[in-house]
Amino acid sequence: MKLNQDEVVKILKSKKIKLTPNRIKIACELFNSDDHPSIEDIHQKLLENGERISFTSIYNIVKLFESVGLVKEIKVGNKSHYDPNIFPHVHFICKECGNVSDMNVPETDNENLYVVIHNIMSDYINHEVDDFELNFYGTCEECKKNKHGLN
Ligand SMILES: [Zn+2]
Ligand SMILES: [Zn+2]
Image 1 (cartoon, protein in one colour):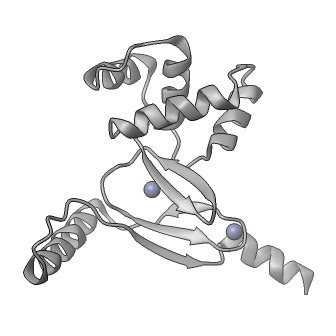
Image 2 (cartoon, rainbow, N blue to C red):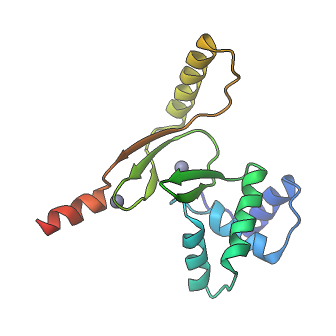
């Protein structure tokens, strides 16, 4: 899903975020990424595109987006990645390189999974559940190849 600038602006407006050029640039970068970038990744990508936005500014803007529910933080060790898909879904996290990828579960299955977990939770406890995280950990394809290459 690629969003153009107008669509990104519409999303920011819907969350009552004051529009600034940097916010729009970072939102375009973030909302169009499917590789769960860290602040460092976004910083690097913008530099490559000739955009000079400080690390701190990017951090503050991403945190602003997170506070209004536009992105979700995924913690891998002490590093944070950001996901523009805020609907609960399944991740694979590589223990070697820290890469976070979405597992290919069709959306309807994801929804069913959410409903199933939600029902289990509300059957046993009185907490109100509105979110869950399901992460698988291991070695990604790329790292597996590199490992074997060393043998
Ligand atoms: Zn890896
Ligand atoms: Zn994700």
